[in-house]
Length: 113
Image (cartoon, rainbow, N blue to C red; front, top):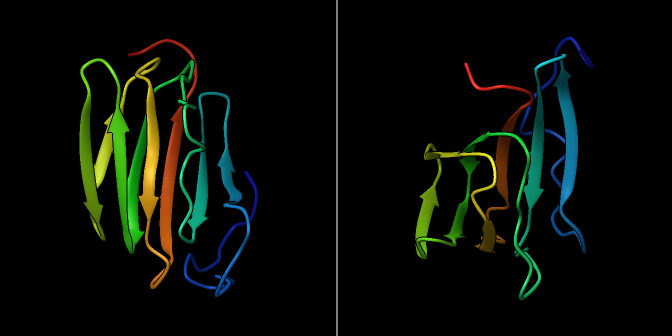
C-alpha cells in the first residue's frame, strides 16, 4: 500500500506534456492508480494490450476510448466507468483539457475469479 489518505483532486496541473500516473494502492492481486490526462491520447497506431483485466472510472472531464475487435468507440463523462478484459486491445482517442480528465484505473493481476 502507498499513502494512507489523500485527495484525488489535489495536485492537478493546469497543463502537462505527458499523462501523469500516481500509484495509490498495490497488493499481490491488483494495483490502483490515478491518471491525469490533459488533452492526451494514445499515439497513432498504438494499442494497449494488457495481460490483466482493468476497470476504469472517469472522475472528472471527458474521454473517448476506442476498442479493436470489434471496432467501437466509447465516450466517457464524469462518473462513467468501463471494464476492459485482459488482451482487449484499446486506446485513448481523446481527453478533455478543461477540465483535465482524472481517472482511477484498477489493474487486476493473475487468474480471473
